[in-house]
Length: 410
Image (cartoon, rainbow, N blue to C red; front, side, top):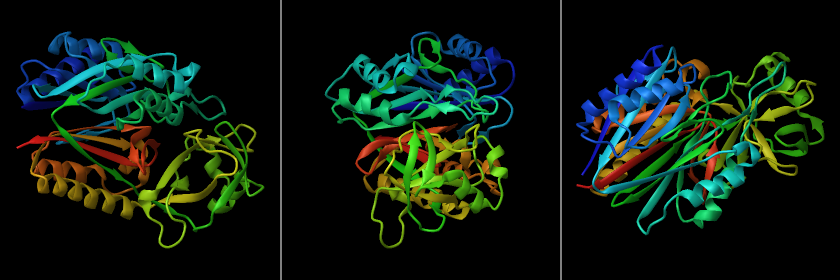
């Protein structure tokens, strides 16, 4: 039997907030002793004090993983304003949790990912890896855009050590829209520039869905002809800044960091002919224009010269429809399989909030509604990068919502 308790709150007193949300989580789930604690709080809070408050309420035995987030989502709460925080406590006699962390991500994401995987105990009943890492390599300067750590080499390092046998879910963490430095909860300590992981094992199953919401701007494929690191300079031999100026009809977008005005870069990993399938695309956020106004910085430096990309635009109608349909389909599959869902985790891109997407309502509210109707405890947060298996491998994603539901036999 597995119990899950969720607590949430919003307040400037970080120590008090940590204690209150942890106490609330224990009460709501009837938790006598936690085996795992997942915690996220606003980047504006004192993370050490918040962590200490959790320890005051929950003791020092259970590992605490998580860290900075722009906002949090639970069954009955959603906030990215003020000082939001949330805690999930899990107590189980059928699920095992092994945690580890690795630092020095700035010295190389692949090495950090490999080191994390090496430090995780392995067993024959391992089911999935939940991991969170520091997205921010260098905060934004004046006038340069932020430089971010890449999920692609990080995941590659993990997969090589795990022999590709374990699906990986998780997120790259951001604590605010200014891309200021983040903190990670690494089991028993609070760190920065780290990656933390929890290997879940035992008798349980999991289901997941990736919510999308971007469509091709015009269907035209462009080839990257000049690129360095995470900076794209030319598409089809034309300065990329010039192309985007034409799309917007002005240069005002160049003042945005990140460029949140509905435009992303997409890679189609499916068929190029016929109606585009949103599930075949991986989209990349544009974090800003370079100081010399000659290039654009990408959230993930996993594109390369020669790749074909498309300009993508956010479609709020499609985003909400995707969440509504995919959540229902996921819960339907679980019911058809005769399993009991005991924990839902929603990792949501911070660009999908109603405020950032200029939407009349929160898309995550549909996840809340359906999981509440199914009596599934929900714990979610707003991230920079979402990680989930897609098209044959675990990938870092942008502009998506990843819903992961853990289940057990009825």
